[in-house]
Image 1 (cartoon, rainbow, N blue to C red):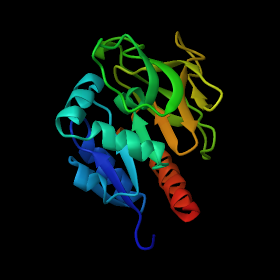
Image 2: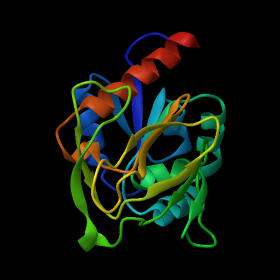
Image 3: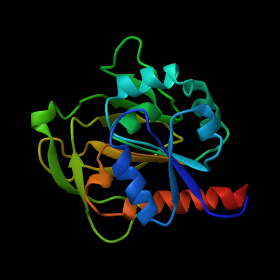
Length: 205
């Protein structure tokens, strides 16, 4: 492939606009994705924060569940934040019995692990692979990762407080997931890192 890197943002529900803006600032061509034909035009995909059960339900209704699963299996780079992390997990705890996910990362994620909306918080988190010191992480009804499989790499844990040690960022090959919302902070390092991952994957094809 040649030309600009096109990164889609799954635009079914959640903080889509913020991701589109952050990706554009990170020098990618960002587009909303709502239908399979739009998915076909992108090199990589971001799954935003929101409500994972709603995103899964709408992905089925819009005919995107299986196409996204196939693109993930075929090596498309995907980044998921908060609910997006849940959507990339191979196993979800405290989900609805009919909850759908895209899977791809060998990890078990617990929904709403940090508590309700009133338990949302912000904390400094050091993310492996990303330079520049701790990341100002915003957690909103966030999940955490209970365990990872041998194919996944832990990139960040909560540094202090009641949840110290909990896993909040994971990478597996072309897939990246964080429990926090970098799109809400103005710090573009996570988005830039993902764009670099996507460019590297496209070069390797």
